[in-house]
Length: 314
Ligand code: ATP
Ligand code: ZN
Image (cartoon, rainbow, N blue to C red):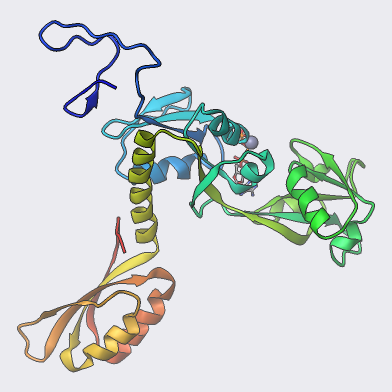
C-alpha cells in the first residue's frame, strides 16, 4: 500500500508535484470497515443508535442501501436481517448486527464479538388451548410450524424427541388454526400475538438478543478499526448500566458509605468547608441504585445528586 501521512492514496489521485500514481483495485488496501445492519425492523433503530452513541456520525436514509460515516472509517450496508450472516460470511460486509436466532439459524461460522443485549426475545413452543403439554416429550410425532427449523431440530434432537418441523417464513401463529401444524415454535417477547391467535406459550427453548458478528478472516488494518469500534461500544454499554452519584456525608461515615456503594475501586472524596463533612462521588450499578440510595440516606447522606453516564471504562 502506498500511503502519505498515514492515509492511503486513492486510485488516480495526483501527488508529489504532478506525479500521477494509479493503483489497481487489488493493490489498494481498503481500511474502511463495512457493517451490515437491518434496513427496516426491530433491530434497525437500536443498532444505529448504538453506533451514533459511539460518536460516529453518518446519514441514514431508509431509501438508500449504503452510507458512509464521517470521521470514522465505517461504511454501512442496510439489508434484511436474514441476509446479514451470509453477507458477512461471503465478505460482502466485514461485520454485522443481527439477532442471535438468525445467526444460529443461518449455520454461518463467524466470530461472535459482542452480545449487544437489545432486541431480547425467546423462541418458545406454543400450543392451542386444550393441548396437554407436559414437556418436550408431548411433541413426539407432532407437526411443529416454525421459521427456525435448524434451532428447533437441534433442541428436539438434544431431548430425544421425534417431531416434524413444518417450515414457514412468516405468520407462524396461524398455522395451527389453518390445520397445517399441531404446535408452533416462534419468537416471543410479550406473548400478546400468541394469545390473539388462541395459542399459549408452553416452554421457552432458546433465548436471543442482538449480537455483533465478524468475519473470522479480516485484514489486520480492519481488525484494528474493529477494536476501536468495540472499545467505544464497551464504554457506551458499561455506562448504560451505571449511574453517577454525588452526595455530602459526615466524614466519620465514609467507610460505611464505601461499603454500601461497593463495586468501584474507591469513591472520590473531597473535603467540604463545613468541618466534619465530605463530598463523595462514585459510579453505582443501575440495578442496585435504589438500594444504595436508600442506605446512603439512612446513613446521613445529604444533597444526593444522580446523573446518567454517557461513556465510561472500567
Ligand atoms: P426483515 O425484513 O429484515 O427480514 P424481519 O421481519 O425478519 O425483518 P424483525 O421482525 O424486524 O425481522 O425482527 C428482527 C429480529 O428482532 C429478530 O430476528 C429477533 O432477533 C428480534 N426480535 C425481538 N423481539 C422479537 C419478537 N417479538 N418477534 C420477532 N423478533 C423479535
Ligand atoms: Zn428477517
